[in-house]
Length: 101
Image (tube, rainbow, N blue to C red; front, top):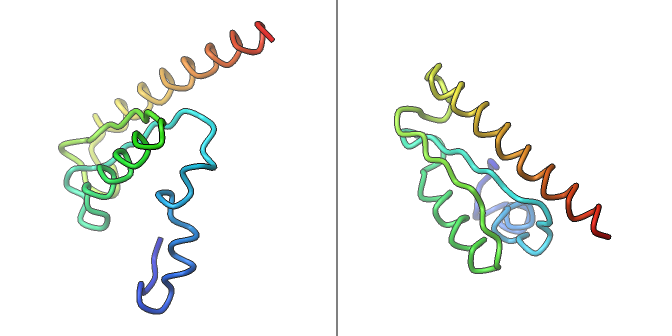
């Protein structure tokens, strides 16, 4: 999100994930570059804490060598592998839950 908090506070708060936690219904996988100079990694930590406070357990991955652009090739591989694993777990869990209905 980009904007001036003084001018656009209402719109920014409405679009912020942290103010919309009750709308979350699926598992979340969150990646953040530790060297991100655009969005501080603390924002991900705050989101993770808020999610846990609302009984949502996200999978958070802090990529130590990368910034905002995920420029490290090894991080791309890790990102793809973790995403596939996360989606497969969610798909398997969802399928098993639906089969029990």
